[in-house]
Amino acid sequence: MDYVVLLLSVVAGAVTVLKLHLTDPRFVRLFNAFTGAYLLCLAFLHLLPELYAADHDHEIAAGLPAWTIGVFVLVGFFAQVLLESLSLGVEHAHQHEGHGHSVQIGMVVGLCLHAFMEATAVGSRHHAHGHGSGDLLMWSIAVHKYPVTVAFLGTLLQTSLPRRKAYGLLVVFAAMAPLGVLLGDVTPLARYSPQLTALVVGIFMHVSTTVLFETTESHRFNLGKLGAMVIGILAGALTLAIH
Image (cartoon, rainbow, N blue to C red; front, side, top):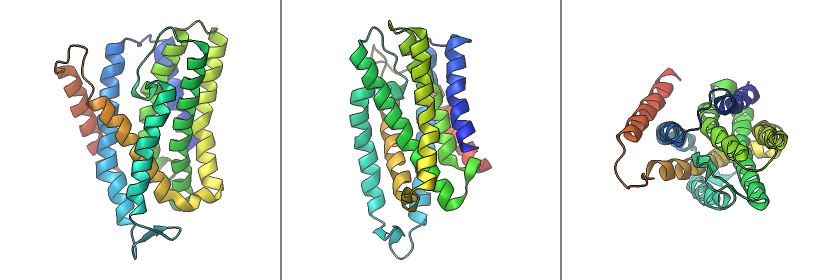
């Protein structure tokens, strides 16, 4: 079920671009503000408390002490800084125009690594806890992948890249999450589920805070963005209540 949900998120993003034509930067920014608030809400109210609540006898997993959770959060945060040097911030749903071939490759590599790392934690959690489609981390990533897909495909279609190749790159990107889930589930990485989850929390924090603290071009407060953020927080709280 994890694989299906993560793939459907990419499909929904592609449909938004190809059929609904909702690539207007204003729409993308508002939905991205919603997503950033949603991810931050789940990270602080569920994922981090869950990680530290699992601390028994000051060890969380694989003989590693509890403080390593904080280390992995920081590693995830700064790993995202490096990934964005390749992806050009498409994780924040930023669309770009007129880039050359080398930059396209960098963007694809950065996004694929980002998607793969996130999904590896989902696979490890599934192996450790059997959460399956009920795991909030998986749903968080699925929600996050939607605006990323919109920005990614929108960017590819605005370049001189042939459409067939653009769709091929989208398929490669879509495959990264299922591959990450599989790797985290069937390899020894499953032993490090808390650390991998902490890594993703760090990524979430960087993506969310970057989105939420961005300003408009005029550096004026945006009421629409505030509304999207409030809705994102409420949606996160509702998700936790239902869960």
